Length: 279
Image: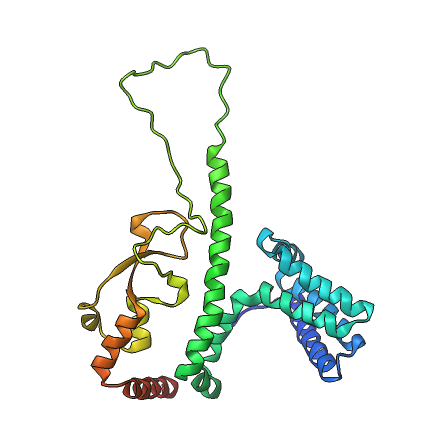
């Protein structure tokens, strides 16, 4: 189903495209100050018209994105003041920090295209892309979850207001024990899993990812040792939310036993990628 855009959003989309075009031309013409300034203004105006002014303000001025927003708008200001090369360096770095979480989504979309997808699905390129951008996305999600959990902890620690208008006394049972609710928040440096590696270090792998990357069947994973580690998507130390993972080295060894050699595994991956593209 195609995305329905209003006339106001269509104008914003056009302004954003023109803004990116002017920025690209400004970089080609040896960082021309005028083209870069016009491109930045058009891009920000178009983005505000597409998602709305209030959402744009909330996006740029989130607590976790203050540094990225400062670098992005600081780079634009430096470009306007006459130092385009230095300004573009700050602006590009801030842009990556702001929109880095959307890069894996764009990569997954490009992998479905005929020519670019076959290049991105090559074994070496795929491992580099997954290990860099997806790790950044996991770290970003972890920082956001830690901030949200700290807010929940602060709100639960505030006692409820007492009702002074009620004159009735509530009888207390001396034998009843006091029940306290404890929210266990994930600290940054606390190791609660039973393996020294972290899931985001690309040394552990889930069963679904093992079957996808190494083309293994569920029966081939039954003989491997399983481990428990905390999911990067949760902040609560709950056993039910911990991931069941395998060591990547064990999975690779098992895959080479099934397929015979790493070369056979790569050939099978390329064969299946071509079959998906033909479909």
